[in-house]
Length: 224
Image (tube, rainbow, N blue to C red; front, side, top):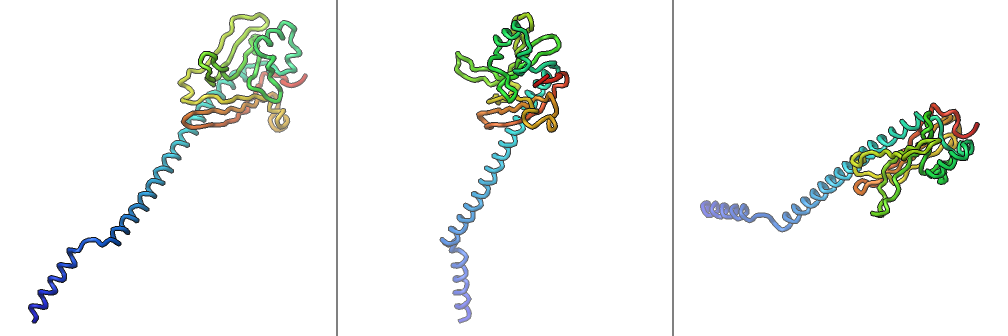
């Protein structure tokens, strides 16, 4: 009897060891694996999105600061900001030259999409976004600094950054205003140019930045 009992017990144990996973155990395992994979996928997606946004912000800041530094150099070297008030002080001949170069679009004291200045050598400079390219019907969206001579008009010279410097971004809009018109001279001081720049990229979306640029050589940009 003892031997038979031991033999039956051994057979019983072998049956238990060889039965494998039950259906419930397999379902539970796959459910846990699915939860784990979902969590990992979300983590990877969040990490990629965060990297993409960080990369876009970093490049947007670099391009914005590059543009602002170039504009700052022009503004700081200027002796006059051609607002409507200064336009009325120009001679008829100079007014005609200014109008032929787009001043009739007006650099308004409250803000506009371009700015016109004059330096100590009587050179008029206009800063604006590149206009649309009629043959391609596209808007390049790059910064242009246009030089013209006053009182005698010479060949126009236009300065641009190399396209690669924009790192995939374009200028969606650029606006200028006299900062003192936005909040008073007590807040910004006199002869400070406000610039708002919106960049856009097919890959990274839009990036907005604002700058306040002092024009130390300008005596008065809004009145006598």
